[in-house]
Length: 159
Image (tube, rainbow, N blue to C red):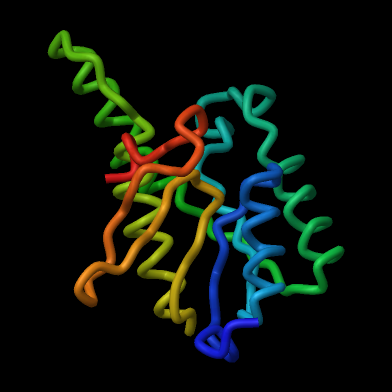
């Protein structure tokens, strides 16, 4: 247990998958006060595409993982922000003949902006996800660095 972690509140963005679930478990093990957060970014309901996005199943997975870990969980609805920042961007770039990367926009505008802002507003000290990368401190500044496992590295779309 890390003495710097005790009492610090971390909201973990959870998808229901293994990576974010393990992140939550590891942070809990290190002494952080962990809350799991499911981000509903897309349901397809507005477009009659609900069957294409199993968000309710994902939320159920998050709920079960959090219950197993003994931590609180909540759900944030970012569908409006996702449409404006990711979907509209994607179609705009395609219409200009460009090849967009919606993951970059989702990470920048949803996970590391909307989610961070809401988590901090609700009392979190920090957020975490299940992305594969390293965070290092150099001269008292934090930086994002390539993951130890080159095959799983995700830093290329976390900027």
